[in-house]
Image 1 (cartoon, one colour):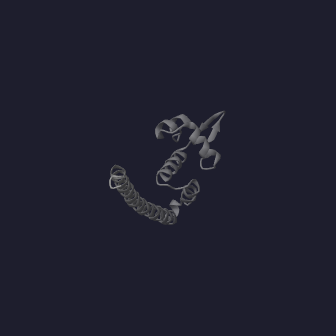
Image 2 (image 1 turned 180 degrees about the horizontal axis):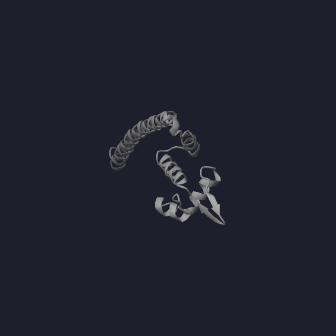
Image 3 (image 1 turned 60 degrees about the horizontal axis):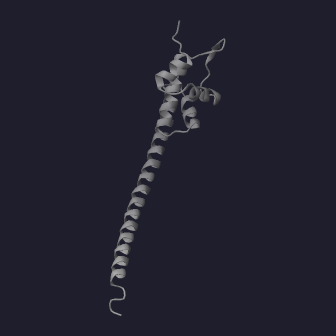
Length: 135
């Protein structure tokens, strides 16, 4: 008999809540079979969950993960799936590089604003102490 998993097994293995797994079921990403009221997950369900969680860590939306997972086609070498995954990885990397650049620019602007504020405070303090001395 093939291996099977309960919702508690998967939650413990991946350190997530059972509610998270049920959420993925509601979204149609996982379809466990039922034995009475117990959900029974297959090794394929476990792999899908692993890929969903990996996609989440990489910044993929659930729809992006779904489209990549649904491309699984071992009979044809999964070339389309890998190409789609590579395209998404490159897209996310480009987005992160742009965000990093934007953060670096903002940090520079914050440093400049901080320096100007400190200079203005110093100048203001100096004026207050010397104010009225020549009058």
